[in-house]
Length: 363
Ligand code: DP6
Image (tube, rainbow, N blue to C red; front, side, top):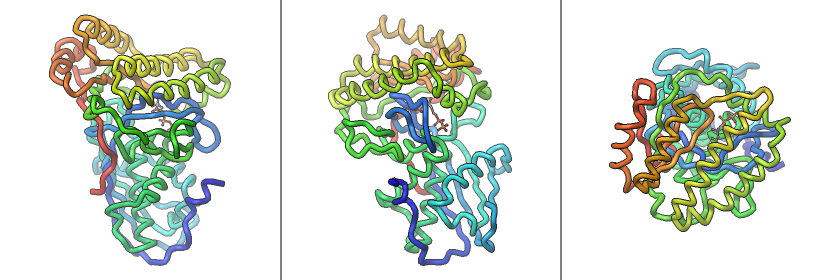
């Protein structure tokens, strides 16, 4: 069992109380993860840009208690107790306890806040689970060595990514940047279904500081959660073709990311977004997460590209919001276009300008 390497040896030190804080960004997939098996293992490889401005800050405070049979923790969002987050954290603790055997010896206070508004419809599970996993690994480092965990080793980051995956699959791609692969791929050495790994090749400078403007089309709760959506891939008539398509799209993307061929990048990225949503349209039961304004924005992006030869393109996650990706040198013209044409299709004209980032940091 490969997972066994994440089970620690008995801890040598005692820790009565303390706290650790980490900031972790969100990420946007270029090749999408949609469909899983076993314990949070992906049916295909995915790759994402790590973001920068959209992030979660999490402070984990801990205090030793007499070993108990249940987990003791409370979750706070922006300073207020957030009971609705607790079942997800409980499930996470249950899944990871074999890898973090100290969990039941402590009472935890988890204080979290997002740089983006909670109601923005941006999923905080990737950044949130990644930040929490890093806090826990950081605490474990203190129990093992007494070091403060300021700079985690490669093995420690790998363990945090492994744990984050058990909280939310895409979270394992949020710890480092700028491009993270998750899931075994024959052309990516070291790639694994258990944790994210850095894209191992030199990335063309055209992709450095790549922009992602998140157009907030719909800010409400999703009607169908990612968990349900992933589940519907089990008896999906096109599942196998979709998993093969993702593998082959990543094979095509590898040389593109090396040679900077943005027109070819656009073809793969937009096709991946539409294929993801096509899986939703053809699930049983079927569902649609795009809104009329999602399509309106996509059409406007295509027209803008035709008219101006811009290299801006879109991608989607499991929701109605549109991520507009564009190279750094188009930042001004694309921002003008967003303000003039696209903002009208966003709820309260809201959008968030973000860019590719380099991963989580200790606070
Ligand atoms: C469409 O990581 O949210 O954003 O593992 O059930 O927590 P769980 O799912 P989640 O799924 C994300 C799916 C996606 C594509 C992607 O990020 O690759």
